Image (cartoon, rainbow, N blue to C red; front, side, top):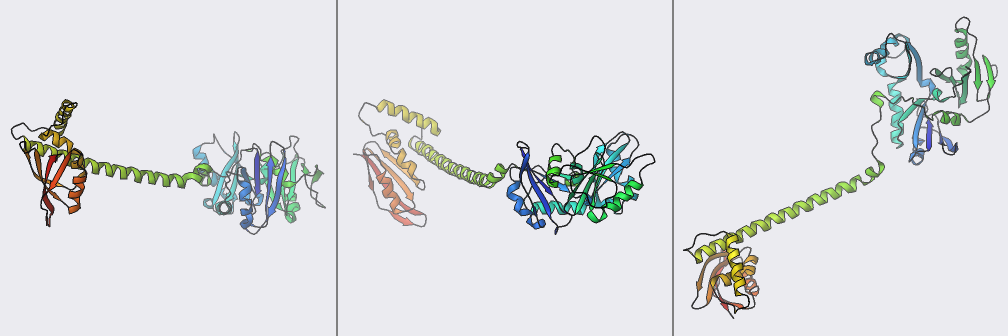
Amino acid sequence: MTERLVIRLASSASQKNYWLIWSDSENEIIASGEVDNAEQLSTLTEKALQRRVICLLPGVDVCIKKVVIKGAFNRQMQQALPYLVEEELASDVEKLHFNVIAKETHSVHVAICDKQQMHHWLEWLENAQVQCKQFIPEGLTLPLSESGPWQAVQLGEQWLIRETADITWSCDVSMLNTILTSKLTNLADGVSAPRIESYSPIIENAVGQWSAHDAILPMELLAVGTKNNTVNMLTGEFKPAKAANPYIKKWRVPAIVGAILFTVSVINIYSKTLQVQAETELIQQQVETIYSQAFPGESKLKYARIRHKLEVMQKQLQGSSREFDFLTVLNDLSPALTSLKKFQINSLKFDSKKQQLQLALTAPSFQSFETFTTDLPEHLSAEQGALNNSKTGVSGVLTITQK
């Protein structure tokens, strides 16, 4: 992303929040403005799309301290860090968020912020549907001068001061001279008072040595300072989870619905397959039973062997006149018998002399017998005997002959 949306969050929900969109490729401001309160951050929702969002935290809410340590900074030192500065803080360390922003040989610089305040800022952004992965204390985006002067700029009713690479602070306009007097008075012996370079109009009777820099919009100055800035207060319990791909999120529900429909479809197909398989096995068992009844002297054969015999016989009959024998008739009746899903064959009798096959059947209705007769091959005819209706179904005898 070549564009960044930089939002300077306020200390309270009722205060103004400043914002600016900066283009790295064009090296210029795309748009800027302010919103009156936290609720109006929702007006930035669309602007945050497809842009990297960086939030600046007010210096009045973030305290940066230099902490002297002994030995290397490791995991144990990280856990003990809050208690090394506990006496210097007015709040319970358990309610504070500590984030190391710089490490040196015998010291670290740590940024400290109230956990509840961190939750408030994250809640504002969540309500506005603005995703932000980086919180930077505002003072750490001010320019860093190699010659040593402090950098200063006024944003709204507050002044932002950067003393060194890792020490910054902010205060209300009314408190600026008071804090400067305290800091300059406490300088070590032999250390001259630093010059303060201002990017905003210098206030009257300002304490210290001030010099004016070329005027620049405060938010532009801070936005430029966010480039390649690695400081991030969103660590530990505030570390953001990996955001889902917006395209995946967009198509997640349709994909789930499609997967459910596909699963249901597969289940239906599988159920129907099982049903057809069960019906096929039943018909095969009936064929084996009929064959055993017709040829009691032969060994019992499975359906596959019976089918093979019928196919061989059918090939032998090709090109010759059709004969009316048991196996041939049984093969011709296969399609009609297969359609009789709820028929029960009670008995059959084949009379080679009369050239007829009698089937004693039980069906669920009278219409079933008519359907069976209709499904017979053209060269066969069926004579229907008397039909009896009982609790178990409609039973009767069909006499199959060749036309």
